[in-house]
Image (cartoon, rainbow, N blue to C red; front, side):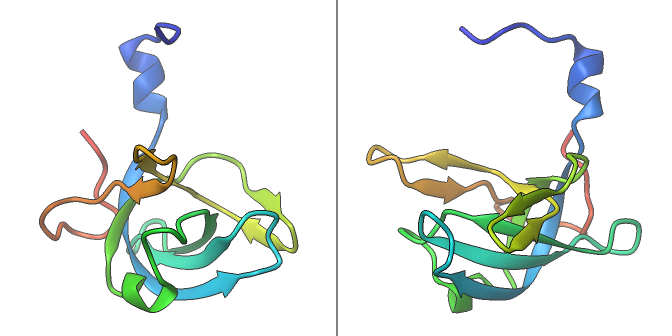
Amino acid sequence: MADEITFDDFLKVEIRVGEVVKAEPYPEARKPAIKLWIDFGGEIGEKKSSAQITAHYTPEGLIGQQLMAVVNFPPRQIGKFMSEVLVLGFQDVEGEVILCRPDQNVPKGGRLH
């Protein structure tokens, strides 16, 4: 079992919904990845991320899709690309990532409750 955290610890993690506005293959990454530009709306704006999601997703298929990401981690250098948010997903039975997404459209920047 994972380490226990308090509810206050959980509240520190800002999980927000954003819409993919641009996506490109990232062949220079160590593992196959896709570069994402995600619009989180007015308060947060557009942020970048690199995600190892090539098994189930294509860059063109992600445009206009909503997904969930942690927006308050510090930026992280992924090769020559600066990743500003952590896109969230679960591994399938083969270890490939399936994105966490709302099952209906919600306002950009909406926070997970």
